[in-house]
Length: 298
Image (cartoon, rainbow, N blue to C red; front, side, top):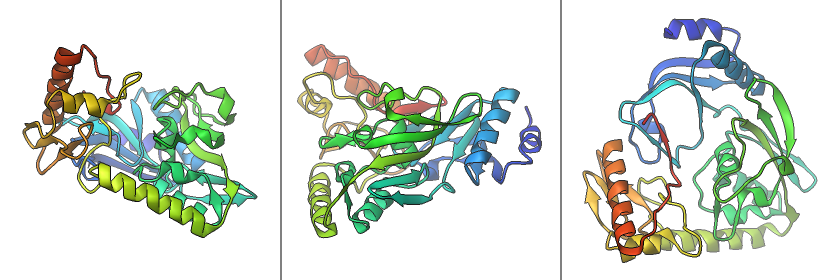
């Protein structure tokens, strides 16, 4: 289908419809090709309209959050990619915060601290947006996104908007269990606390993360899921893969479950490095590492 056809079908959607948009600048890894179409709905109803139109026209649709857990193929992504940078409203109701899918976790944590609401410190250092964090149940050793989640407003696969409780999803480790539902808003139940105490916990967590993970380098966070009873990073390091390099992609010397892009790396480099790391870990320990990162366009 021609881009002009999709643009015409979305003429009533408030927001931007752009063609052949480079995705690499939006990704933490800074690699990958363009999206055929890039949709930036103005509000929740516009996102729902985009879902309905893409479904009716048979256009594949993906939702991009902070770009911190996705690897885009060098050839790009066919179909449409939707981004929620316009959905950034935050509303407080007592000890609850309702936030738009496009709010970044760092901004959410700062706002919660300023409001004297505690609990979200467990998500310190995750460079995601709320929608993506919920979808993948992002977390740290201290806890996960679903720990404090109360309810969601989502776009269902048929393009309808629905309110769904936390108990309607079967979240697991690094997967919110949303299926094809798309997060528009999330409501979190927090606890009142002194902003200074919240900030101290936040700072301690951030200091620890900065000391153990290559947060200042281009990466997609943890590449592999931790296998039961073990840590992927430990296995990768023990298999002799630290600082292993293919092209411009390298296994971090700080944390072996991170791949960093020095400059000019490609998605093909990333995949090749990933395959070599998996092979070495399997040969040494008999463990088949499973990816935590998502792949688009492969």
